[in-house]
Length: 207
Ligand SMILES: [Fe+2]
Image (tube, rainbow, N blue to C red; front, top):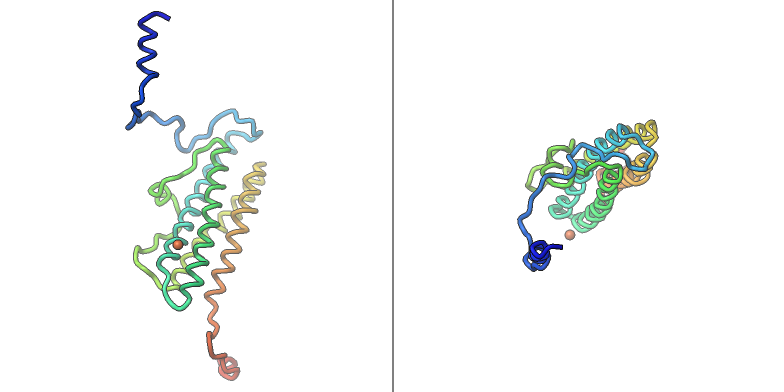
């Protein structure tokens, strides 16, 4: 190595200064999949699956956040039990988000990540910033689950048709099943049964 080159190399390598504020062009554009992965899945299949999984991801991230909003803002005599239940479901949705996002990446795609991109993509209705009463909170959560469950049923069948068994398994075993169970736990709270006084059988018949 020439003296000049040695000096230049030393200048670039021996430097304790952090190189902050760096920017560069993206290494992969959103909506594309990388080529030549040894997965035995056509690029066209991976493109369709990653696009669909990103929709599922955006809706799941929105439902996850709706659970935290409900956890914080819940009010009334069932505060304690719902405060805990909403956070339990939030934690389960956090895990599902990670599983969907990493499935997209392993298929060679790019997962949505940032809130603004999620807000532009989700099909779930935006709630107000303020507090709402419990029946409305639960109804919003159930509506969000319904969108996700409907999508899971279509997406799992399509994944199976295309031979993407891994996506089919993820969508059915992890996303659909968890959402179905959470729907049960929520919907039982909207059954109008008396809390203290049993209803008079005569009144029930007349009704
Ligand atoms: Fe909390």
